[in-house]
Length: 264
Length: 223
Image 1 (cartoon, each protein chain N blue to C red):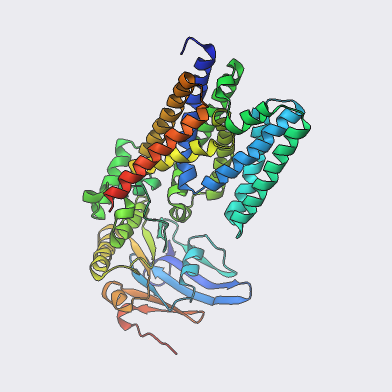
Image 2 (image 1 turned 90 degrees about the vertical axis):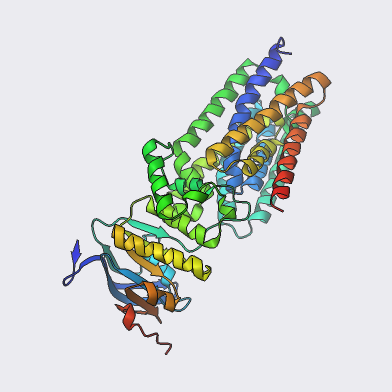
């Protein structure tokens, strides 16, 4: 399998993506941002379609839209009383925009499928380098604010009581989340990127009792999903995204079942 | 150090007023806390006890008046509510460590060990917070605040939902901290028997005004 260049690139890129999404996911789940992550991926879809329309790489359109969207939607989701309905409205608007951009750019339906469902097999050398650099930027951002991010995400009230600048930490995290959505979507597609951002971390909560342990488990579970997904995709020729989604869901359900049985 | 009379003051409050929109919470409060005292902040629900604490913690700005802490004050604050649901993943130790540096050097680990021992949590430090009892959780919140080595600690309704045994355990712990570590305690409660048993002084907040005195001489006025 590794004699093929595209498989080597695919493995390398997905390894970094899995690590990034594994780490960021721990905070997505701790802050109850799963719905927000999903909305950002829909905004990212519109961004990618916009990029196709103006003729640049989908990754950059996605980054642009998710970054702008994260601040706007983040504010809304934190402060609005009607947050679920207002976020739903924004999702709808951006999916609509995405469909429009795709239609007027005269691209074929294959392009739309790639954006929605991922196309890791098609990533080239330059793409791999871009994804790795973006992943490293996200990880460094998290590391720089991690002490306060930990406090704010796992004990918001305590963090305020101890004078943590929760607003600043929140914004840094939203930016990191937006970037993770854009890079994660390159492998599983914008429709399913929230899988990598929520399921490994949700599973890790049942296993780990410290933040480092949860992060480690979340990364391992994300890696198992993408590596096994790529391998199974390679030998069966079925979509990689299908395998990743299924593997992550199965691992989550097993961990959940064990948790329920233990606490009965 | 602020000084008033003989005792050293750790907090001096002058003409402090608070309003939300047009609703007056309290008007021109004047009181002071002595260093090393154990004071109960008493008063019916909705009289602004938590508001007063939030002002003292710098989380809210008063409309008028001022307050002054001693220059060497190190404040610890244990708020009233926390978000610990039944799926909350962190262990007791990990929760306390949220207030410690990211990299756990030997020194940091020893500090955490020390506060775990002080708050009688060493043996259950790896228990999940979601599985801890109400009394254990309150001691965890206290331990987390103690990591900053405060010389004054403010607790908001820390015993409100605890059973009698857990209450006694927490209050004995506060007494120990006050006696052996010289920590000034400001304890928000409306449990008057409990305050009479453990606290030396009281602040009684009611109808927008405050009264101050020795706990043994406290008489509640419902008028």
